[in-house]
Amino acid sequence: RTALDIPAQGWVNLHFSLLPAWRGAAPVQHSLMAGDEVTGASTFQIEEGLDSGPVYGVVTEEIRPTDTSGDLLTRLAFAGAGLLAATMDGIEDGTLKPVPQPAEGVTLAPKIQVEDAHVDFTAPALRVDRVVRGCTPAPGAWTVFRGERLKLIQVAPLPDRTDLAPGELAAGKNNVYAGTGSYAVELLWVQPQGKKPMKAADWARGVRIAPGERVGA
Image 1 (cartoon, rainbow, N blue to C red):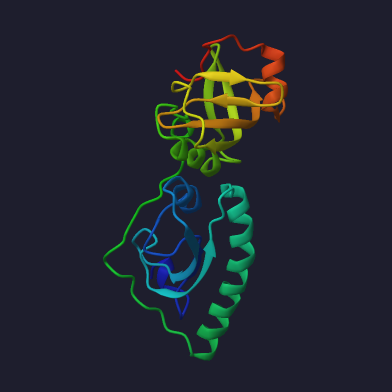
Image 2 (cartoon, rainbow, N blue to C red):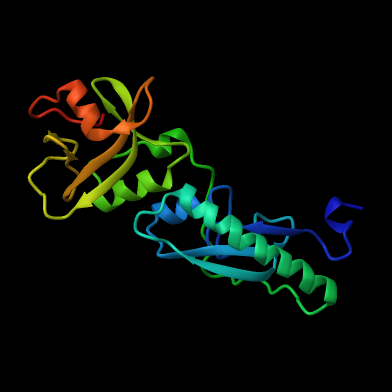
């Protein structure tokens, strides 16, 4: 007898996506990086396939413009706990039956590797922002400056600034900007290699960015 057959009602799992979207280890990160506007949590019956079992219930969660994966995971953990409790109650009293997932709309969310968190400043600004938010706090979005890794903790797209080439930096008294493949982003919080997180403006004052210097490969 296999482990899947041991419980009379099967095994129940809580997954942080609206199945069948984002099956796998990192659904929240992939949802953010893909630019989804809504995500959620699903309870489903485990079977041999990857997060493919029939679904008991879902809750939805709006993705806010500045959400990181850490923010979203925190909210989904609270919402998901209530969903899981309601699912178990429904299974126990016989009022809840699992519904097979549709064959359409399947997407995969494999574990985010460090290389996946490498920010490509030739990509559009919205993509840069999504990668930073999706990889915060882990594994941490990053780029390279003067040959050393620079972690990017928070950026903000700036549609009105289009004068910087991809990766080109511009520092003012209290602001730091980087060009992308579309318009600029403001660097808000960064973490230089071997140091603690800091405001990007403080970092820029310390390193004294020269005209034309860039982040990126």
